Length: 190
Image (cartoon, rainbow, N blue to C red; front, side, top):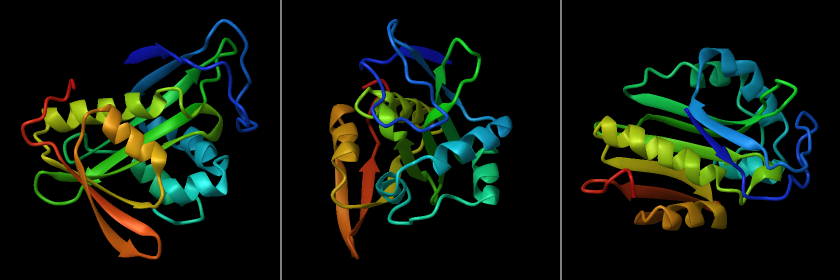
């Protein structure tokens, strides 16, 4: 588990379940997803804006089903993995403010999905989630990451560049793009 302070002043437009903060700077914990996260993860997706939901789900406009969320909370940790970012608050409620899901997409390959709550973007949460996923991928000898996204997606391009990753893109039509990142020979600590 990694506890990291946010680098921003506060969440503009945070979801109703999140308490706006004031000094001192809050702490976000990045950790592996647990089966008990299904309720909190469902609330997280319900509170995403429509554009954020579409960006996270490759153009879909509806939140994941309850069954999909529950399945996402039960990765086998070998072919699939998940991480959440949770906001640590004094009241004890620790809402999820970010999610990274990775699932098998062939031998040595995983498909990933990443999303950060609307009011918590540009605070390094996505970077930290993806870095945790890269560490897992390296440990499991995963050589390729893929994702389907809508374009333009500057936050994801920024994440990829910020982690020193090289990606290739293939147009699928309808404003969607397939992204592939080859990790072979890359250190997860980059």
